Image (cartoon, rainbow, N blue to C red):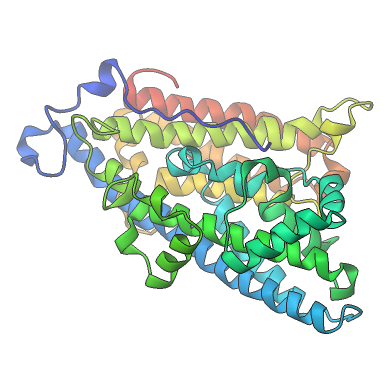
Length: 399
């Protein structure tokens, strides 16, 4: 399992609950505190220019990846001995694109990614190669997957170690380069085509849960319905979970804009801690006899570990400073109330990029070098502390 589920801040107590009398979008702005007015300006660009476009990009690329996998499967059926790698190279490109968007979303793993179990569903690692080998030679299991390929069935949680990005990474890449079709059997490509469809469906689900069912393309709506996932989307408002953040109020998931902004920062703290202390730290400080921890390496087949880490920091950057130039962002408000905290976060983010970039790839060969140890401290301690200072500047308390 990739990580523990993130517990969402459904409501904050104390200072976080005192921002306004009833701060939904229908209120007279004059009834809102200056703080709430400032934070209101932040939440719409955060949701509509950072969160939703990232999830949309991820879903679009995952749709192309699923199409690529269908072509690879057809080619394997036609000639299992084919040494062609062009189709797989195209799939590698779309895997990389969808993966980039996913990693750039991890500062907002709260909400639907958590509630619907999407995070572990599509991003569990390490890949369970032993179970994969067992499934492929199990005729009953393969019949089930062949049926799932026809019906667009959603795969279940017992299969987490066999699903998502890292399962596909295993069959697409070797040492960062594309495999050939004859590197795997037609049965293996069949299984992985089902996995690609499932990844596509989960990515679309993320998009729809944040923006609302009627706000996505009809093609995506049809895929969700055929996968039996349209009901999950209906658990949120017509404008999706994003509407909870842009229109808080009494009786809603977020009562104030401050509580929504506090969740934004909490999500950043969670991913900073994970990158520094888990994604890098687990392998970095593993003992010589602890094989599980030494091999706890994300994206080893594509040689994307360092890229993943950096993209996670990009997600923090997007959340705090905005994804589009000129957007109102949270750090503009924080700079007005605590300049030191604002300056500290910018410095910590910049140093995190530098520390991660300094680790040589492949990460699995360099996870215990001094550069990795420094990154653990810079990201797992310094960046986390800087984000906590921002949380305190916003709410009066550390996360």
